[in-house]
Structure formats: structure tokens, C-alpha cells
Image (cartoon, rainbow, N blue to C red; front, side):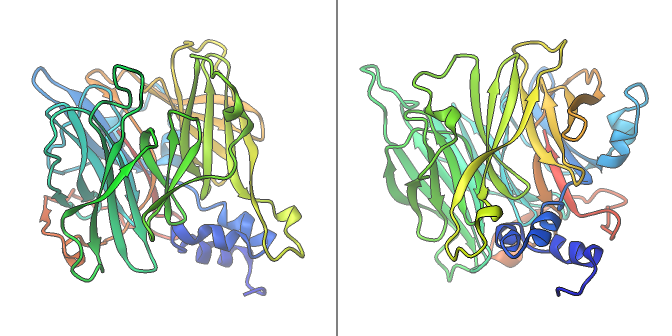
Amino acid sequence: MENLPNDVLSKILFLVPCDSVLNCKLVCKTWKTLASQRQVRSILFTLGTESEMDCMNELYYGYYDEIKGTTKEKFNYRKSLTKINHPPMNRQNHEDSIVGCCNGLVCFIVPHHNVKDPVYICNPITGEYVNLPELNAKVGLIVGGFGYLRSTNVYKVIRVHYPQRFRFSDGHFSMGSVEIYTFGDCGGGGGYWRSIGETTYSLTFQGTLVNGSLYWLDNKDWKIVSFNLSDEEFRLLPTVPPCLLQDDPDKNTTYRIKVLQGNLCLVHLQLGEHVNIWSYKYDLAKQEGNDNPSLGWSLEFSIPYFSNSTKDHYFEPFAVTKHNEVLFWYGSTSLCCYDSNTKKLSQIVNEDFALINSFCAIPHISTRVSLKALGVNSKKHGYYAGQHETTDDKQPEIVVLH
């Protein structure tokens, strides 16, 4: 393969599963560069809408290059994007409802009683979906995760239920009950929620899948916690970025774990000032001649706020393009782009969406993976007209927004 042109290598590496990208980057510097260019061109939107009675999600898709080339005055999501028909998905207020995606399948939160349960899974390309059994509890906090083991073709949904939302009245932290729902080639051992015990970690947000493990931030000790999908054990990451070593994080500081360019990343947001993105990866410069290269944290991007931005509005990075542009949602209403070459931050879309009031974004590769073929008792909804087929010039990696 060393004699293949870079454009051919790039197309081959684009087809490599997401959970194997990290290994490809270790082969050589050329492979690392090409593998890092597996970036988004088409976008799948899930837009949160609100009526007098319900809060719902709507699915749309479009191409990033086309959206970027459209002026703000001309952009209209109903005209510029294609709507995908799917069963109604309830949500609560402005809360993020996407848990994660694996191999084309997307897991969503379903609110019921006073909890938010990761029990809705669908393939937005085929319209197939399933509702998993809901948690019996009616109070507390649920933290979820959705993962895939390519080596065994097994999918796992993880939910951690904290009955007391982390802290008791005396200040002690509560334990989280951990359950896993497995489907795929699991030898008849799936199709139901099974308990694997409790955890003392105070996990926040939804788990981020990278290289066979899910990652969360521990709200108690500001550590990064991993959950290995193979042995189903929680572990602490041996190192953290310098920003997490602060004794007392500022109230205007927030942290989020993301996966960008195939790497585990920590987003350090200082409200009204900057967004720093730290990447956990191998240092190829130190790798030559070393049979056991180590992972470490490096500052990948440092992005200033808009000069006229509202201080309490959040920047939510969700992808990096092949031109090394960081894509953000800003304040849940604007799609923004940071060009690392020119050091400029610009708004791509800034429209008054009327009843649309929440957005989110995660990378997603479109596939025709069948839930029914994986042993799931799924249903199928009407397919949108003019389904988008991927071609060589329109990469199948997409982004989910809501």
C-alpha cells in the first residue's frame, strides 16, 4: 500500500471503522494525516420543536459544504434541508437528547416520569427503530452511554441511575446503579437489562465512545473515567489535561468530553473568554524506535469567543472538517466555524428558528445496519423520499443535531 497515491489511500482509510482509526494513525505520519481527514460533509439535523402540549424532535439532513456556501439571508432549514420521517421522540425542555451513535445506529434519551432514559435506538437512514424497556424508577438522575465492539459485533447501552442525584442531604455522594442492555452477536445473552453492580463515580453528561471504551467526567474529583465495553470495568484515565488540575474550578468554567478527529478530547470552556480543546493521543514525534508509545494530552485548539458574543452562551464543538475547521453550535441557535489556519471564528447559520429551540451535534456514519438482523424486535417507519446515497465526492460521514 506504500505505493498507492494519497487520494486512493484517503478513500480506503475513510472506509475504516471509527473504532479502528486510532490504530491506523500509528502506522506512519502520512496515514495519520489522511486518517485525520475523515471529516464531515453531510449533516443530519435533529431539531427540537415545542408546542403547547409537547416537546418533540424532528430529523433533517443536508450537506455541510452547501450550508456553508449559503448566505444567512438565503438559508431556510425547511427549504435547504430534507426532512426524515420517523416516529415522534419526546424530549424535555432544552436538554440534549442524543446519547451516542455506533455504526450508523443512534441512541436517544426518552423522558418519562422524572428521569431521562436512554431507551430509543434508531437507524435514521433506514427508518428502523426500537424502544428498550424503561427504568422502573420515577426519580433520580440517569447517565447513559452507547457503545459498539466491532471485534464481536456487539452493541451495548449503559445506564447509571443515581437515586439521589449524586449528593445526599448530609453532603455524601450517592452510589450509581449500573445496567447494560446488549444486542448483536451476543450468543443469546442479550435482549434485556442486566445489572453489573454499583459505581462510586459521579458521572456527568452522556458517555463518549472512543476505541472500545466509553468516557465520562467525574463530577466529584474532576477525573476522567473510562468504561471498557469488553470487560465491563470502570477505570480512571492515568492523566488529565492541566486545566483539570485546578483546585477549585471557576463557576464560569465548564468541561465536556468529546471525540474529534478520532481522538478523545476534553473541551474546556471559559465563559466569555475562550474554548480550549485538549486531545488525548499518541505523540508520533516521540514514537520512532519506541515499541510502546504512550498517550498524552496536548492543546489542539484555543478558540476565542466572538467579540460581541453573550457571555453565558455556550460553544459546543462537534466536528472538525478536512480543512481543520472546528464546527460549533453557539447558544443553541447558531452554527459556527473556527478556521485554525486564519484564526477566524465565523457564523455559518444564524436564523430565527421560531419554535425550534434546541440543537446538538455528533458525528455519524450512514449505514444500513439492521436492528432486526441484530436480534432486536424492531419496527420500521416511513422512509423519506429521495434518500441520500453516498458517492465518492460526498462522504457518508454525517452529523446528528437536535
